[in-house]
Length: 449
Image (cartoon, rainbow, N blue to C red; front, side, top):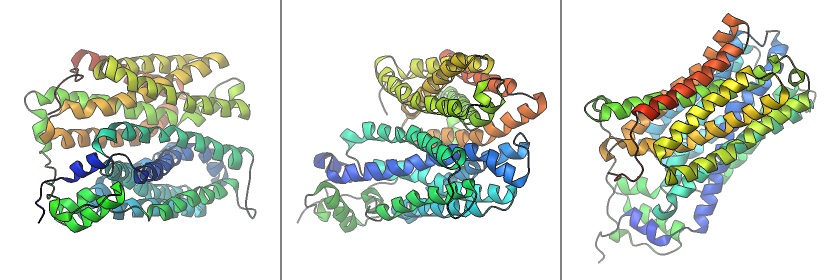
């Protein structure tokens, strides 16, 4: 009789990267594009939506609806992440994208701005589930020797979602493609829901996480999943039960030597989320206010959007290289500072070439900073505090992302222009980088305890 000598991690390590992993990486990444698509998409269509409802685009309600998806995402991340620990990853893995698909389609039925806000919040709940469960279930399928690079690969689907939002905007809003005489923005939401539903059907082939089964002592079921993953027989009697991860009380993060690291985490995640969501969710509106041909040339506006999306790919690649060669702290601080400088250049630029160049640099450095923060944050905390510390950063980040567009709108309303909110975004980015450079510790080469 076999004895319990192997963990799930041991089996995955020995099995290596298999065709099963290629499929689950693709299916998870495909859904990840819809997270980015949904968050960005609303800013492209709101002008047409408010024209339908007879409301000015610059009103505060405009910016509140922009944040609706983020509000729902915060709620979904908060509750569905914990539910997946008790009810299983697969349940939320399937349910979150189906929920998103349904409420994205229902957005087409909006009869006033508040009904649209409600549908956006509800669709965002599904996105929040994907934000926390998709990376979790993917990480629990991958072998440890491949886990890092394929988790990084997941983030490369984000700018693809940005590009997809631009494509849908061009086809349904600019070109005015409709189906059955339905308004173009309503058609867009119905069409956008269909690929997500297809992704749900494809996800039905993905099993429950073997770690989830092993943590609950359901070792025969864990062994069956591991056989599917590795393509080799796994004796359940040889598996040991997994221990559930412990979460430390959040108050412990602000005591002793961890206090400085926790403050750094809060500042950096606030700076990143405020700058990214404040800028990119309001980018279509900001470009429409510039007193040059960008505001009137739709083709040029589309080129601006595409440039900002494409610049994110090399920014992320540069960050991936520099965090290993130069250090986590240095890379993250530099990208935040240079992102702030580029953001201020964008806020003050008047000519089209300067607008193009500065926006591309903001995109490059901001997404590069996102790449660095995911490498840096887990290394700031020891094992017993790591999940809590990272969760604190994510939570504060999501709350900040909600208020970024709203504060942008409030500053626009009070000043009558976009310079003040754009300059504020640039300033927050730069200050976050300077604070990190002066206070944050370097974690490259430190023991991962």
